Amino acid sequence: MRLLAGLLALGTACGFDGRGTTPDAAPVDASPDAPFCVPGFVSFCPSGPPTKSLAITTNTVLPTDTSPECLDVMPTSGGAALCILYLQDFSIAAGVTLRAWGQRPLAIYVKDTITILGTLDVSSRRTLPAEPGAGSRTCDAPTLPMADTGGSGGGAGGSMADLGGSGGVGDTDQTGGAGNAAGGAPGLATTFAATLLGGCAGQAGGGGNGGAAGRGGGAVYLRGNTINVAAGGSVRAVGAGGSGGGLEGGGGGGGSGGSIVLETTAGTFAGLLLATGGGGGQGGDNDDPGDFGDEATTTSPAAGGAGGGPGGPGGAGGPGGTTATGNGGNNDTGAGGGGGGATGFIKVRGLATAGTTMPPAAALPL
Image 1 (cartoon, rainbow, N blue to C red):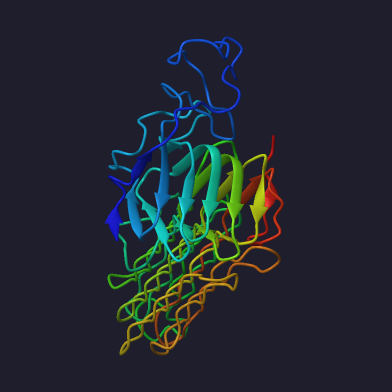
Image 2: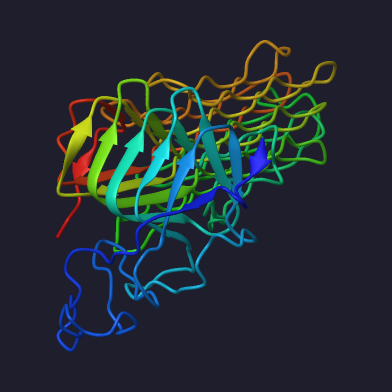
């Protein structure tokens, strides 16, 4: 992987169609530096028209908090600061991944065409806890899992479009400690609003050896006059799996899926949009640590951790549709499993969804 700096290639300087998108904007024959705003689900007012194009031709990492390629512009539609790429054209080659991570969500505004043959990924990964998906959040979930020397409760999964899975109960036969160590309860689900929000992290498992929580998937907004996502192309905002608990430690809850928003007037979509939750981690027992929860790579739910020992299994990640997010498993000889992370949001305007989306794509509200 290499950083994004240096990849931008000079293109034709040209504004978005519709200079003068605000009532007091300058006419199209105004001076080049006349103020104007780029409208959309997330709108902003740049200092001038785009002057560059970007072609991703090798695996690339974009840190959204520190990259010099991110415009230092706050969105006028509210919400947190974004990493904004403002371009003439944008493309990702087949077999290539652009992975964006950091506290800032990613927004890519393109005057002409966005072409995705490879993968645009703002997902979180259990193995990269210091590099959460772009815009991943830590959300309020006040009921934490209990600790118990005979087996602690599992952490709840992160909530987003739906509730995350509840953490499993530990030490249900009460042979050690206080017994019946309750698992964590998920926070409230989120209503889709006019801000670009990443997914929510799960809870860490209960006890001193509780498994780490999975981080939520990030958030990405694509706006172009034309957007083409090929059959082999994908945009991903998947939540990370929770880690398995150590000895008698509850399994960590999986992170929720994030947000994917596409806005255009034309184009083709034959690829994959994925914003599902991570699986919960397995609870540990007196002899064996728990197994970790998986992260989704297809539309199938991410599996919860299992097989590390007799501890409670983790819940499956939320896939959306009619399938509920999995709760962590209860356990009588050890700790409870972590709940699965909930599904995120996919919203589309102006592009027929002939490809595959999970959760099912919904129309972006006007």
